[in-house]
Length: 534
Ligand SMILES: Nc1nc2c(c(=O)[nH]1)N[C@H]1C(S)=C(S)[C@@H](COP(=O)(O)O)O[C@H]1N2
Ligand SMILES: [Mo]
Image (cartoon, rainbow, N blue to C red; front, side):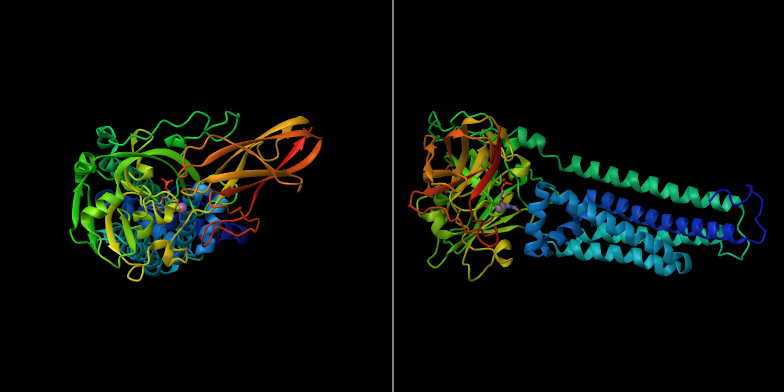
């Protein structure tokens, strides 16, 4: 804004062409800035109000969550494949950029028509209200953050645009004196600063109001009545670089649709077991702790795992057997689905057969000796061996409904995924790493294979499309767990080579070479690694 005239001196000279252009550009830049300031005010206000209504109702997060639910499956697959666990920051970044672009447009429009510009900003708020109310767990209060955001943003833009019109009228008219411009600059800057304060403060407040770290730390886990046997020696062949057999909690893969992690205080948590049962149950967290707890060593796998991918992890779970609870409740004939609902509105349907065929499904309360980490479902989730997570592993569980597939399609099934979710046989080469350079001679190849609940019977390796050769299987720790393997590649010669692996499950089914994507029932195809022997 400076440089147009000496401060305080009205700029009454007729504008010569280059200078007129400069003034116009400055005026447009100022208009864009008012739009951005208004958007900042909206977002900041939204965050602050959301600290009281619950963070998921903040306009940006609500729009983000709605976008996740509306994203067509192929695009979602693409996002998970391309950005991995960063898919959420990328989504939020995209939302912020879109908002900024629209805010600039609103600012420019407001230059001529303040009410229309304000209306555009108000419309963002309306989208936020719609998104917040479209969440499966929405209450009327969830509309408040976006409503407040839209009103604050519209009001700010209206005020700033009017000031801008007085401070810097259209060319031809005499410009306002310097103080008017300084006020505008101060008002714009002040708005942005206040918005940032409200936004950051709102997030902090929300976090502190929602902190369940202390409650999680206070959980005392009783010893299991049915402890897991110690893992046999030799489950891990001890090759450097090979995936650890048991995954540390911090390294356990994470896949979910939650933009903000649900924070549940176990003292205020309860689980309803209802639907097609003779005796519905209502269980508190303490009720669960008083049940006979069992340990289960099991590998959890995500259906979105690509061939060779890392969306599989292994841990020791501790919890209450689901089959026992179902017997207590008395499942009525005809029920074929157990529908888990989470605090964040996710629905995951497990085929009833898989829960009553003798396998050990758990209401898990702990993993690797600790209460569930918040990202993995604290305070309670389900785990069922042999099924992908999307049909078996509801995190932040709050409700179990005994029902039928005819009556209810869970979240992923509605999006076209297979309703059963049986884990496919998979194998992965961990060592050597892709594109590793290894010295000529004997090369140790090692990896991980799984066919959870069926178990791995064999792993074979071939190099450069040659004959398949048996790998050496590490000690078996049970069918619910992955199995590691090694292979001594003798006399590797210098050059580029391709190593491939395939596994056979205990039913004798050999992994197919045919490549299919994860959608709709899990990827197939063989993992291969290219290495350079030097
Ligand atoms: N509430 C909730 N539970 C969920 C999901 C989710 O998006 N929300 N994703 C499921 C999927 S697809 C998988 S693979 C597992 C992953 O569990 P993890 O993140 O603990 O590894 O959680 C399942 N449970
Ligand atoms: Mo998954």
